[in-house]
Amino acid sequence: NAGVTQTPKFQVLKTGQSMTLQCAQDMNHNSMYWYRQDPGMGLRLIYYSASEGTTDKGEVPNGYNVSRLNKREFSLRLESAAPSQTSVYFCASAWDRTGNTIYFGEGSWLTVV
Amino acid sequence: GENVEQHPSTLSVQEGDSAVIKCTYSDSASNYFPWYKQELGKGPQLIIDIRSNVGEKKDQRIAVTLNKTAKHFSLHITETQPEDSAVYFCAASRRGSTLGRLYFGRGTQLTVWP
Image (cartoon, rainbow over all chains, first blue to last red; front, side, top):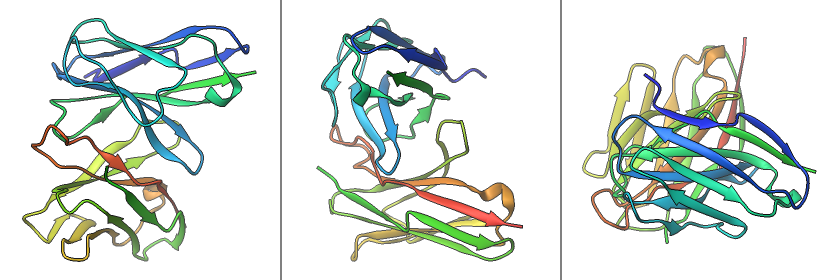
């Protein structure tokens, strides 16, 4: 019962470094999402992928890129990390993009110094 | 797009008391309203949801009510227990529409004191 698995769990980056957050789901879901969570701001959508081969911007896409590698995997890349990207990142998936129940991963804590 | 407002941002109750969290939404076409619970260090998990064709739904100590006319919905937790302490998020979407992504409120930190 893995559900949504994301790695790494914790990461410290220096300003300007790049890194990729990995996410995989084993529920055969079509849609996948990346959110960031900051104190007092709730969950903000960075990017989503409605289906394999498609990606779309969410509310806060600047500074990020994504890749829907296949149906199972959806990665988030920070090309040049900035302190403002210090946050908790959540990957999520859903059967489809039409508002069905979203299942979240456990989160990745990222600190940019 | 949709705008979901959630209140209060923090809520403290004594064990055994009830807790109520309220949300309002702006898009009259929204028809699906889930609630998520996030425990410390974990991802949010769905605890209950309601569709726009019903006004209330219960699951043991948890209930959700929906007022479509006023565009607000609420989470009610009765007989609270310390393990109910968590951050709760409401959300809204147009389920069944290609515009149907979830829009989240900013969350409520619920603390239940023993």
